[in-house]
Image 1 (cartoon, rainbow, N blue to C red):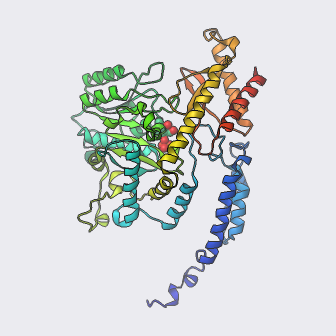
Image 2: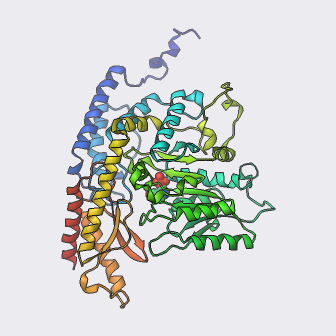
Image 3: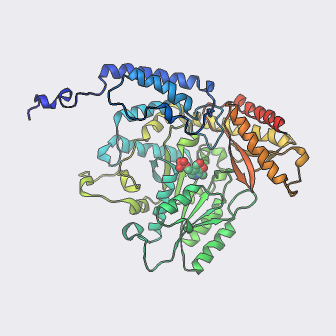
Length: 500
Ligand SMILES: Cc1ncc(COP(=O)(O)O)c(C=O)c1O
């Protein structure tokens, strides 16, 4: 077929083309305006909209359109149907879960990333995506104060990062799971993974996904500060060994999800070293505070870990998704995931850089480095430190308000920027053991959180600590300022007064 064959003309062959450069440019400007307007006016939305589950889908046509539509019509529906039905994670009153807020340079990075369509699975499928990932990993690793024995990669989420770490721990333990699988294997006892009762559910999910099963996860008890009891860990490992099981990995969490407690990493590292098992440090939320040299005390010992996860998409203002997985044993990650069929074999013989697909379960992967690179340059490490320090100070202030009010009770220490507390009218203080008081406090706080969330001004979430309904205020949104935190406290007190 000749190049001028009419059958190669897209208009002839498909009848439809992508946007012309002119149309794309015009629409892209409109989208830039839409995004800028959204970010500027995000506080005009309820953080969590007052809608019911199932109310959104019926507003959309039941079937995909047969005929092409105009971009203006599509963007009008983004404003009409999408924006009002979103949970506004970008809202400075977002204090639920752990914040994920997207910075301007991060958003711009996502736009360019989408346009370039890079896939850094092999160096040659994205030389820049691959090498920039190495650069960003090194910048972050250094910023966090970790030694250069750590290399790493960017994954989508901490859940994936931890799954990779646990898979690597199996290889490091000599199970050869990647080659031989685990089913019906003779010669070794059931593999065991250890975390505290407070570890994130992603550890358990990784065990489920990797074929270890939830039964493989041993939940070690915590003390009254929700920190893993290292003696209980040692005892659990000893008892498993005595029963013929195979300990492979312990997960120490620096900043647990419910209370942000910090496991005793040095003691856990001693045990891991003595037992010859993999130590994974999960600091998905709190890890970024290690960018502040004077706030590194909670991280003592994490440099002894075999792998560490820190999520820039949580408290480093990076648009979803971006999780940093660091490891001193990249060879074990590779043992767990490397599989190179002929069509992926490259001619880059003396390749000194990583073909990242060999270190993770997926083949195709996003170029996450660009947005991080742009962001790190825009803020500088100093700008990021200042913002995180600001959040830490706001959380301190909030905790002080809770502590000073006899009708409120703080339920955990505040090592980072998340405050766990509940409303406990002074008249009920010390009466928890009385029948009904415990349940009454749970009901009161459930209703309180719901009432505060219904105002739309702030959005809070909860957990259970020592079997008590616990409200959490997690400060981590890029745009949160002291008056937003003060407003949250004002609303809590006002709504509590109505319920009392
Ligand atoms: C300590 C900890 N680990 C892991 C995760 C999972 O993070 P991701 O959503 O990136 O998988 C979370 C989420 O909040 C977390 O708090």
